[in-house]
Length: 156
Image (tube, rainbow, N blue to C red):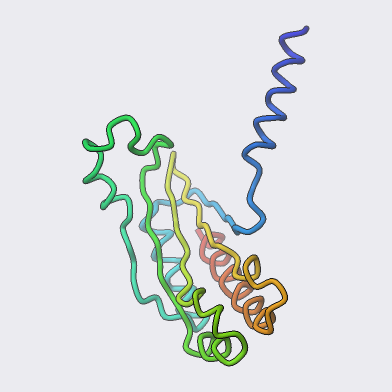
């Protein structure tokens, strides 16, 4: 009985320690990484965002596996790809309202793959915006990007 109680308590502590970060939007689907990347890229394009680069991060990291040894890919992710994207309208509006937040341009979404599941990770611009005059524009962009990701990964 005591072992069961300890296991439940430790499980709760473990879950709290790895609780989702509210500053990061995450959406997962049982899809191959390449298919998810293509779908998210298309939906971002449909929403008016130009995907300017696709970075196969895991391919670059693999080159360091020998050098990093046991420290390489401890979470055993099977793939990591980032999409770098932006909208001219969005950049113009942010530059008009709060040029300091142009550090959020371009935006990016990172997709990770493990055990048949791909997860899209998007850092919410509003998590940085605070009371910026650009907050409303950043919220609009955040909503559009989240909708594109959800639509892409729900389509399967």
